[in-house]
Image (cartoon, rainbow, N blue to C red; front, side, top):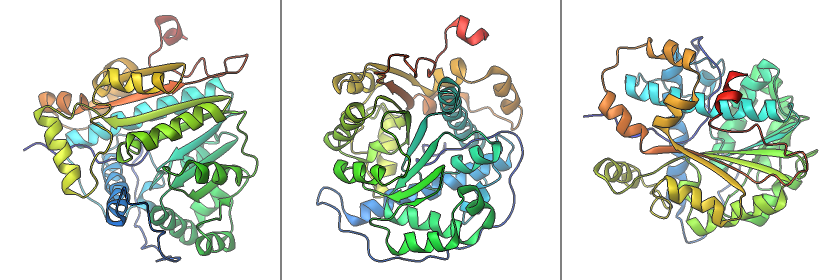
Amino acid sequence: GYPLPLAPGSRRRGRLRRSGGRSRRPAIASAGRMQAPSPRITVEALQNVQGTSDDAAVSKLSACQRGYYEDDFIHIFVGKEAKRSPIINRGYYARVAAMDMVIDRFMQGTDGRGQIVALGAGSDTTFFRLSKAGTLPDKYVELDLRGVVLKKLSVLLTHDEVREHAAVSREAVLATAQELETAVLQSDKYALACVDLREVDDFQRTLERVEGFDFAKPTLFISECVLCYVEPEESGRLLRWIRDKFAAPAFVEYTQILPNDPFGATMLGHFRTRGCPLLSIQAFPDLDAQRKRFADLGWSEAEVYDMNDIYYKCIDKEDLKRAEKLEIFDEFEEWHMMQGHYCIVLAKHDTTAGKLLSKVKLLLDSAEAAK
């Protein structure tokens, strides 16, 4: 049978070169017990959601090793290696390219003077790749659940290169691990903190503890298969708060859609069996519902495309040609079906006089694309 749907969790950045090296086991096992979550989701379910980040990282490493994109850091964050099928590798390439495209257009449109907040950052290496490329925004903030943040702190503690890009000391990493409920690991450009996205007041307090973070600056929120694990009412509170609090917010979400056909039923069963059901997909089951979600919450603009349109209309054509030569591929029917069950939403609410986010788009018109 065909592979199960792409595992949720992380972002990737880069191109061509393969990654190598061996990973180390985390040095930090625990820094106290996880706070008891509210009754609407169990501790076990939270832990299962955290596990999806590890699955995504393994798939990212597989795609990297096949040459779909370059990531000099991913092998550090992955505790095991696995060879994924061509359809999964190509799916992760499409996801990589799409999220990279949004980040690049945000950086260009804001002249690098904005902020990025990665929700459910997991084993994400985007900050470190941006740092190595010398293309960081003014501030890059990573937020996730406690267990995932502890794993990232472990990597920072045991790998000098990663810690040097974050510009933090071993002492700061250890101190953050000991006071994880309130501490923020931070430097001039980077911040890492533990937060429950359902608790908007805590979310605001966490960002307020990030030195130099400015609610008036253009800010891109990145969410890859994160809000799907949150009840619609709870994610709605967060999205409404972002719209109200920031002068120029953009929100890009990679998520699942179409739960009610046979493939969608299989997809739902996969996540349900793993103990991390998709709590919001029935409320926002298709492209129109995803677009309406942001409109109903007061966001002024929202572009929504499924991953077939993203792949064929938005991603750089020359890079597509390169990627499509990497592996023998004949699973086109399954490929289009799988891509049709994932989408990208890019919402904006720019209240600035200069419309600082005007160049941040998924699909460019012909004149823009020619530049």
